[in-house]
Length: 294
Image (cartoon, rainbow, N blue to C red):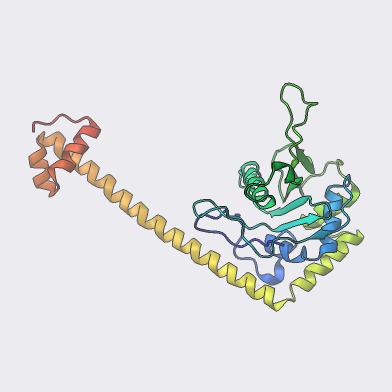
């Protein structure tokens, strides 16, 4: 199982609240969700509810706590839940609290990174197993009110033709009121949205959440990540302030050069007044289209 960490410096990172106490976390928290889904039976049943047409006999966790990173220059990712079944089919399940407006592109990137883990260099593409990228969202990413949006690659000219590349992307919406999924899946999504349920699976899931929050090691890990995220936020704010100051200085200097040039029409005089190089003044004059005498 690959659990999500706060990601910075080239890593894909989810937007999430940073002030939620460990004791108040629910299944919609991606960190806690990843921990609870370490229970293979819970994970298997969840997948079966999302994909009732499949026969998922069991799930296993092939990657451990490994980040997927193809090379030093590319963005790395950590998946909330990354499992495969007995047939080798791969499932990535992501808990998504905030609508960042980038989920389709993120799903595309996760798909590509997952594929890189499925075959080694020199191996035939036929070895690529089916892969499902699943996002569980608190809001409707597509605005049509559905609980479930499933995407496969189809031919635009003839939608009866499927590409059959083995990739499927699913976006679940916990806020939907539509009667368009099974009662079992709706019970889970209602639970994600914060509603209680008498559904047996949801009760087991809720028990697992309660037990997980008693795990001191996980609590410490969560708090460590929380502090790291907060530190990075503060660093980002400070960098933004410094960049803003620098931009303000540059803009102010540009205004002063422009004003001096319009008054003197002389690069030399302007440079002398503002104690700048003539090259800088001449460059600013050219960019602003200000005629000068020298």
